[in-house]
Image (cartoon, rainbow, N blue to C red; front, side, top):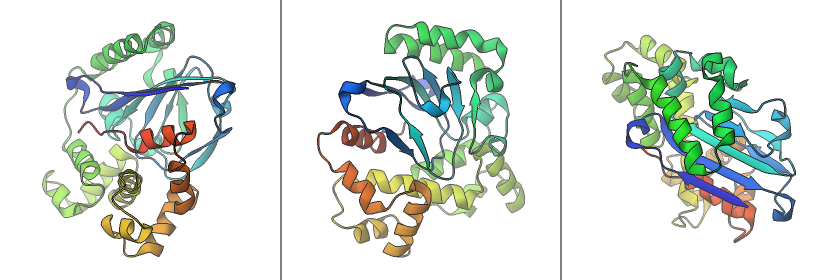
Length: 273
């Protein structure tokens, strides 16, 4: 199994959280099913060596932000290269409201147009991870040219930085918008209303905090993440992950199994804010 995270160049760090690569085959004894959890961040995924059965009809697809979990079935061999974006990135690059994308997946040219169809083949043909990243960076740099920054993008990144725990009035003050204008534009950019978006980012933060080893119980973790109580935390974790919190964290703690290594790397991925 090969799994790695790669930092984007400086000029793309406002759009891209990181690039990732995942490769495996039958000898790696990976689980047949991957539980994809609620996630605010869209990903552009290139399948160059096998992929999820649900996306067999796509060579490359955009997986939009999602509000619930979904089971995905791994192929016998897996070869994936992906760009993990910040929530506002697709709206900033293409002007498409995330509300039109959320909880769906789209073939590459359906979103980016035939003009960039050649990017597919260039990334799939690149023999090294570094080569794939170079092609991806050139593609995104071309899209980014002459795009104006939106203050809502800053609000979304601040929400991630503060793990969902920042007053909405504080964020709105950076934009000069009315409450209704702020909520409408925030939803168009992120795909979710501000309060719902903050719940998902808080959920994602709980996974990162747990694997640091600083919390001995779920009660301590729920308090540190500003949940009302442990039962509130358990309900919300189940809603966004599709599994019980204690079951997920037992998987993370398995030790040196491939599944545990991938899970730990995913939840500990550094945010390039």
